[in-house]
Image (cartoon, rainbow, N blue to C red; front, side, top):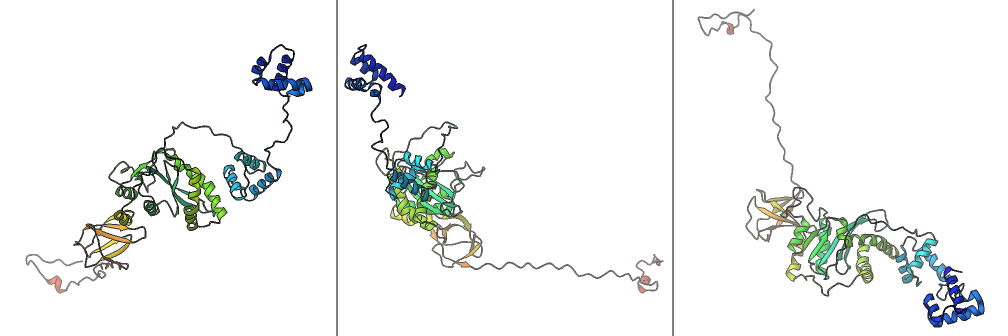
Length: 422
């Protein structure tokens, strides 16, 4: 018997001896008068056993059947062996039609050695929570993550954007790296799909912000990405700590667990297959589970106009200032380009031109808003520099003229006599 039951038995005995009345006993036990009368009747009839609950020792009506438990353990060990309990619970329900609670799945995984209970981490420092933005499209958080997404031992880069107000994933793409071209291609597709957000919150990678000390705080010196967003009238906000953009940072551990295993179950092995899978299947499923209702209704994405749509290739290109040589050639990335004789605008030697390298790899030269015609030249022949040949010389002669040589008889000044050599 428990101490509570012993205490209850003592109060009922006092009630039987009429030391207290039913109302007092009800108040002490925290029960209704009717319940106290029933317990009193059972104690009079059965004695001490009368205060013990009748359900003790019986199998619960809601107990899970043994065959369901064994089936769940089988699938956990065979198919979901490295899943976390919450994700394993969802997959057991979705694929095996086994409806179990998260805690029950955690308990089963602990029993079969698939899960180790973890102790709570202590907070290292205090950080206040930032309230979400009000509207969908008001601010996008963006970042990239290198991870073994396809379980091949190779690190691949996943670019992701997440809406701050709704918590929705608005873009996922596997790319070669987090460089200018992959990021530009990501946002070009984003603009075409959703429109232009008001702000983009990202880290201080050199792709997004100049990190050189001499120009770090100079607003005139822009990275290619900053220039693209300024042309598009989208504000970029650099984060000064990972915690500042925690919603996109917290997304990647979730994706490293869920997305990797979803692609494994679907047989996805390459980035191309992965991009189709996240676009057609995963994003929809993820957003249905993890999105939240924004504080205010409305979508503040700015739809791009037809004119802006035609300019997207130009906006999301790598741009650089170049010069026209005296022979009307331009050099870029180690290649030579010959400008054609006929042009839509007057071209002069030594003029500055804007060089655009599109996402597709095409090169364009523009001058005063007009694109120039050109042909690609083969590699220029190297200049042959003639070596300077020094003057030819002969060895110095050791011959000495004899005393009777005419040279010795030559007198420049008659007053002086040429002395003979010994």
